[in-house]
Amino acid sequence: CYQIILKPPAWMRVSTIDLIGADFIGKLIMVKGFVVKIDTVYNFIKEGIYRCSSCGLKISKKKIREKFRPFFFCPTKKCQLGKIKGRLFINIKESIFEKFQEIKIQETFNQKKNMEVFWSLNIRLFGQATRTCLPGEKIKAAGILLPEISISSLKKIQCEKIYLEALFLEKNDIRTKN
Image (cartoon, rainbow, N blue to C red; front, side, top):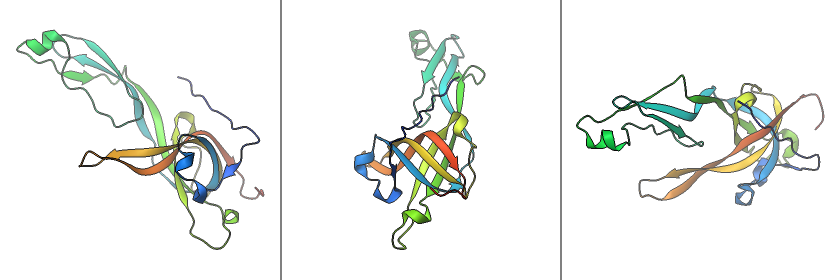
């Protein structure tokens, strides 16, 4: 399994977290800050392989970074029309998983002008980028800013919060002046 890492161009400006707004969603941005919180590393399912208990059918379901909803019943006509409903069971050995971690960064002291509130941003790391930083480290991350969408009880789509899906992550030494 391969992972593509996009290194941002040298001319790309570092955006401050407090100036990030709706006009940045879906765009490649670069931010700099201190890591204040790291979550545990989870396995994220990229492709689930299912097998039917009655007819033996093998089904593949690709999942693109959304909530995991497994299949329960076989979709074939043989299982739908028959008396025995075919149940699907996930095959862990054949399924493909990816590492996933979420970190939270906060603005650096030199990005603040007048002792204002320190803004923070969640960054999602996938694959080899997980477990690369610890709380207190200064990092520079580039990626696509995306909204986290939820559906309310009234069937309305709401943007809960925004996060950066990191495509590039670089640790900076605290002693250097950046």
